[in-house]
Length: 348
Image (tube, rainbow, N blue to C red; front, side):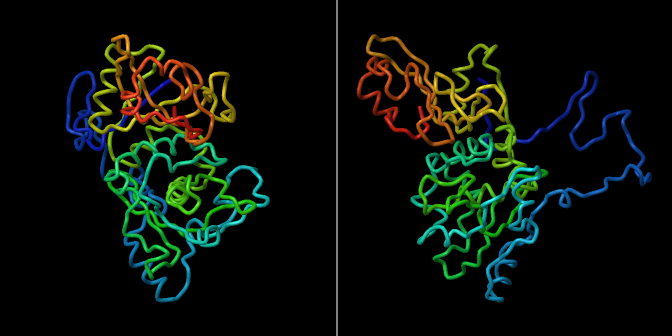
């Protein structure tokens, strides 16, 4: 497995080569470029590269309300090209708004939690495992999923929602309409474990808009998603050659609010079934807890609690799995502290 972690903030203050150090806003010595050469000018400004970014989402929403219509996003329309860029078939897929899927839709039901996130047919486990990680920290998730939406029960519902991502060094709003791809009345991409809750599906749609299509999210790095949703820095480590003191670092990082994900190396395009141990190659997971526990014999065991974004029975089945006899080595008090649950929810 490999793992990565992200803090909630921080910026690179300096760049360095083998001879000199300079500030990141300075041009390295000997690398100056003429400013009057039009061929070297940047063809686009940063804002021009941020697809789907809205300047003021409320102005757009209020204008839609005045017209008495439901918002339809011209930049990310409900068409096949917004789904796939390849020859993938869109047969049977239709776009429906949450109120056409549920009789009482809600953006959030009892707040945001890691258990909400359930992956669909799209290979975007890297994004969803990051969502589940950040969902454990309310104040960070509210940065990405603002609470000031025009919801169905607000009297201002107009079919428009906005989400925030860190792009080109600043937080930007991305607006979408709430039409979601479904097939046979079932949401086909990411969804919430509660059928009345839609923050997962709508957040995924906003992120797909930034990538040009839903298929644009197929395959990626959790570290990229963590940066886009925190504005922080990431670090990766390969467990084939673990560094000294790695578990102590994981303990410390988790304690102080870092977001952790891991993956089992392999081809993500073949990540559709588990091996004999219940793990899926080429698949990303969320690390939801890091603990060092004492057994009844007095020795200590290092444990990670991990969640599969599939949110089902596809879980690790070896030592320390939900039904493993190794749990007899610890007291009921420790089990309670670890919130041990024998559920087919993807967490082990």
